[in-house]
Image (cartoon, rainbow, N blue to C red; front, side, top):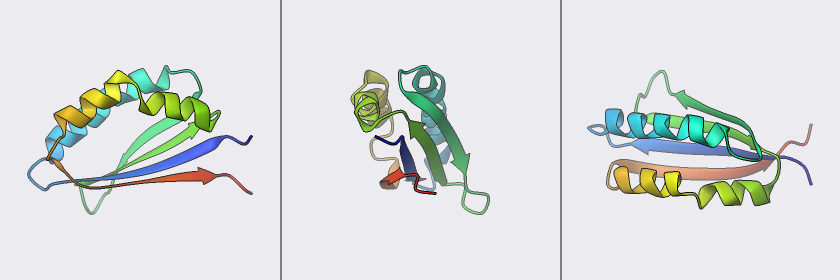
Length: 96
């Protein structure tokens, strides 16, 4: 199976940008150390600071699914409850 690319868009509420950003930063080092993580990069929109994007590459969907059930993601969800306006996640396959 091909590697799995994840594009996750997180839009914070305007008064919760700093909170969401701080909690997203907490995910980076621990996730990059996980089995199967090839790339885990956080971006912030230059024109809309409330919009964050994770660009991720994983060895397999199975290893990514293991990642999404980890405690640090549960902790993030708890810490940002009510602070995120919109969240979209796209599972992608590199084709060219």
